[in-house]
Image (cartoon, rainbow, N blue to C red):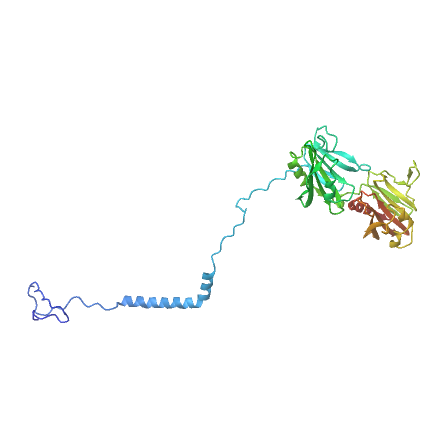
Length: 405
């Protein structure tokens, strides 16, 4: 090839330098040892094919499972729920400080008090029926309850008259030198408790709490002595133990029994009442029942404020007519129909007999009402009457022991 010619396919006009002289060899032309590379190698082609197959499969899978994938993507990452106060090592509950305290029951109410204290009677109602009790330190010489000086730490009792918490607390003043703070309220163990502070001109003060048993509207009170500020925490602990006692918890099996062989019935009565029961008599008379009474008023107890009686007499009329008889009219308040009194009645059962529990009271009276139970059986009329202080629970206890032979 002529060295002065330009190489074909080259647009450069620069002269081509002369090659370095090579030793002469065979005259056979030598082929270019570097072969032009192919555009794609076999391995590359195979790789592309595999990639396309995999890509197609992935696209097909996405199309098939697209709803599930989108559902997972659309769901937010759940946030752990944090419960306030919940820890891996929960704190043990605070022990009940009153768990080992002593328990005392008074007129349908029970409460607990510390082991280093004692309860003593402050007032009596009838025979062996405590109206109020005091709580004092064991060994303390205090023997009275009240609002002067340093009597019992607390005085707990019941009120004979039906009244609201507000009415009771507003009457706590004894004279014009005393003042009462506005009534405040707190709730402890479902007890709604009202309380006030009674103060005198000399700076002496006591605190009174009052609450009501909703089952019979009986009001209870707790009076704290003049050191009430230092004993406030103790009082709240005692208040937390208050419970209304249930009639079902009273065991009547050991009570005394009156048996009437002539009519054919028996009834039990509390052991505090004398046995045998008595019958009405003149002044100074003490007539004892014999168990053969067929037309008498049998009396259980020794005081008009703590007693119950049974009127038993031949009778063949209806139950409703029983309350209009002369026997019924001989029992206070002498009107069980509601002509001159305010009455309410409730149908109950006594020894499987239909009976009426009637509450009657003088109109506009604020005292506890009278209660009596009327029923008929064995050709006799029966009227059980109770003194005013008897609660519905106590009446239920008495009635539960009545039996016909």
